Length: 63
Image (cartoon, rainbow, N blue to C red; front, side, top):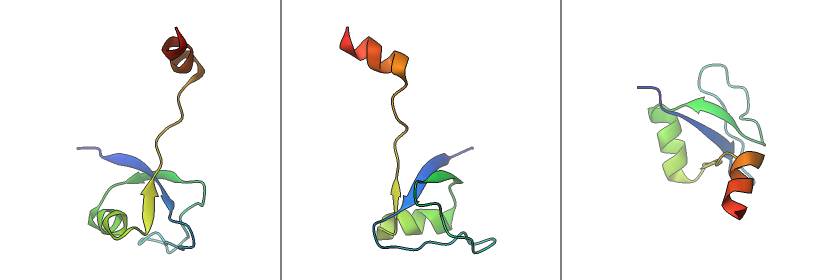
């Protein structure tokens, strides 16, 4: 099962990757979900970022 989500830190939070301790990108990045990331999401330390609508999808909604 490949559960990938785009996550970004909540406002005022610094969240580090558990493997290499680098900070999670402020604009968000794709993350392979694990128990660590699920805990961070549940605690409110990270926020899931929904992908932006593609121009074609946005145009179809307008019709």
